[in-house]
Length: 72
Image 1 (cartoon, helix red, strand yellow):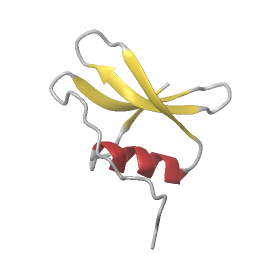
Image 2 (cartoon, one colour; image 1 turned 135 degrees about the horizontal axis):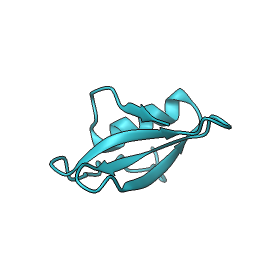
Image 3 (cartoon, helix red, strand yellow; image 1 turned 180 degrees about the vertical axis):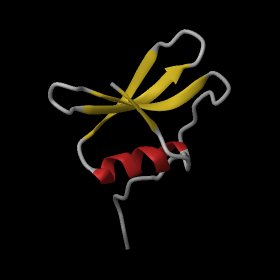
Image 4 (cartoon, one colour; image 1 turned 60 degrees about the vertical axis):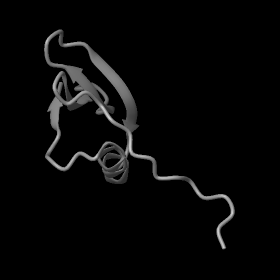
């Protein structure tokens, strides 16, 4: 019996106005997953990506199945 388990809650984003993007730093290699507004170019950070598992967590959290583009 599991008493304190995390709920795997699906989150949503505006698919008509936003696209999932990974912002990667050229200097230190830090990667941040989030959503970029298609019209304004504004980036909304969601989570830091340290390992491949973090990226998979981000993709399952928002129901993303396609490959996510990287921007530098």
